[in-house]
Length: 183
Length: 88
Image (cartoon, rainbow over all chains, first blue to last red; front, side, top):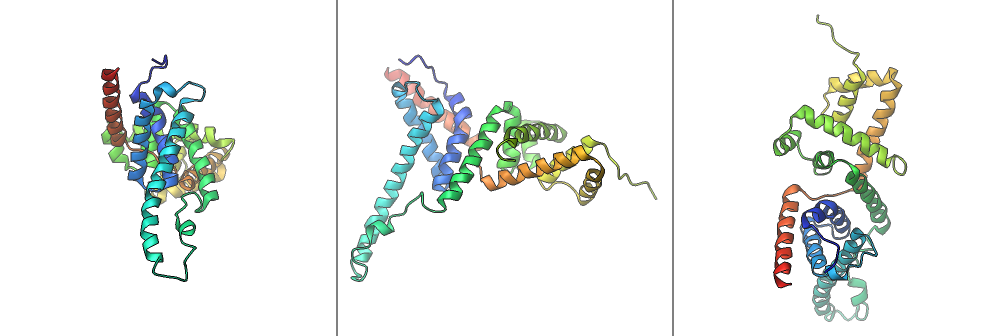
């Protein structure tokens, strides 16, 4: 039994957005990304014993997630491979250059842009995690999920002027946090 | 003709600046803000940084999960955790 007690509710509050953001910049599909993050948490739960606490919990989760993403691409690439072999056998001109060139590589498309933006995305989520929970929640809903003011007010049971005060504090804190490297 | 208020205190300018980040400031709001930052250095600086924050969040394409989705994840995870406990 590891001495490290885990609380799944906390796990998701702490890491789900970070893992999701990491995934979606690599698979570009919300639903698939959600599934991969869910799978990652479940796999992590099963292999808790292997977590020695040498890395941070987040790094450990990311390493599991990376494998999940690779598995996902392997699966879709093997399907593609099968389809293309059949097509290419009919065409003698392209014989010999089919497989390697046609395997979709998830990491080569605009790799550098994605990498830089991903770093920025991570920095934003890091700063968000330093905010008080309520501020972070409101800021996320308003700024990242693009919810209407009214929707947020109803869901969180706050007034509009309340919301704007929270947004103001959150934006000021975010600007301070990101100032050094990004603003 | 009623007197139109052009000058406003900084906290109001800050509020308009926040609303402007979400396209929720009216044209008149924006005009007032423009006037205000002409003579107020502090608000000028704040507006610049606030606008930059909006820009970098936009280019970052940062994404996050909504509440419902997280609740669902929590449920699944809790279930799995309970099953684990029973097995041990």
